[in-house]
Image (cartoon, rainbow, N blue to C red; front, top):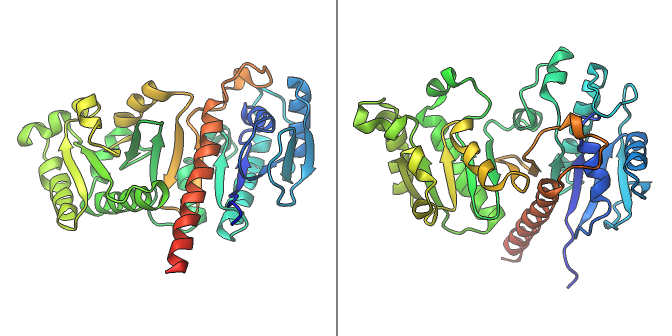
Length: 335
């Protein structure tokens, strides 16, 4: 039986940032997949020349990835891009690449989407209401709930809420939201990471997980009832635990994933542990999506002085997740 080769599509993100550099650098590496990059071919050629990287840019035709060659699905810039210089004229270009890639995943053309870093501010400055990749892909795929999770080789942190001002977080933590998030997290850990009985540790919202109600009642009123109800359904969930002690080694030994209540509760710890080698994953979508864990690094665009670890991890994780999903679907069909 021939080995299954996942088919991936990558977006190069903000054209003035390091996304095009990363795409060109990826062309030099071995990846066990078919890989297309959705971007302007002229941009990739210009950035390769600037970096002194020899690459053959060809049109996408479902090729197996080969080092030294980059298969491209062309989406044209609105105006030429200059490394390090944002231009609102290209905001729609960034979203066009993302739409083309996501539609390809929804239509079964690709098994997974890997996204390069984009610049939210320039999209908003162009008059486009844009919160982030996660929310954009959820709306595009008509998915009512998605979960943002970052992962390293040793730690996975999912978020109950994502890009919200801190003052709005408490109102968003409802029984319905937490239940949906935990069910998605549990399901995708099973289907995409082959964890048959995943162990999930849940953070409290308040200091000391509310200190028995003296520092807030969200744990008593909302988090504990949801956790208990899902435990009764057979899920292995621990918590809510104080967030300042969840990430000690003793607790992490019993966790396949940690659910943080808000963005800056969980991600600083994860990025401290694995920045530059962590992967951003959107759970709950009808397709696999991974991404780098960093921004556009405008000041480094075109310099050649960038780290590629997070992108290569994102590509390899997407390959692994797609292969696992294929194996499980194949097993289901065999049954």
